[in-house]
Image (cartoon, rainbow, N blue to C red; front, side):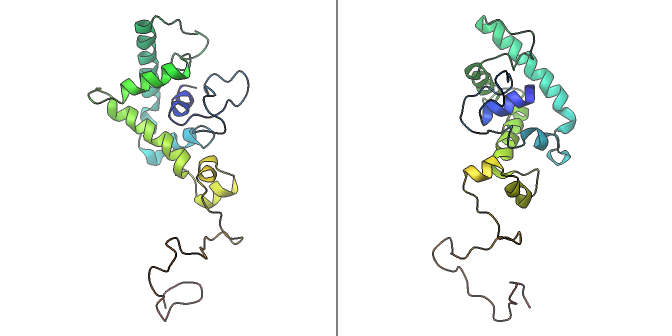
Length: 176
């Protein structure tokens, strides 16, 4: 729940169900969590998977300290960070990623991976992400592949070809 709440703070989305505590519901449509932020964080390629438990604990400690500073009563039925409102989560994350914070690098990594899940679906193949209706790629207007699963662009993005095809290029686009 804590990692979901963090990812939702970075790229907010709508609640999945009425009593959803992790997702604050600060934005319409799906956010980082629906885009696979937890799957990306749990992917060994990120290099931070072994430290996620420690980051969850530290985030809870920071949330408790923030709540004490602000005179807030946290809901004991949910993890401390989850118990903060969206505005409070945002204020705390702003502190954690600020220049000079001793743990800044860790919180920036979580922030980047939360964005990456939404912006690029880095934890899955692009073809799978598009077939599954990945919310971030769809929101950005990412082109869908042709029926055979390959991307071809009949119109040049700059309105003209960037280079002439080599005369020995095969019909499939491979060099001869």
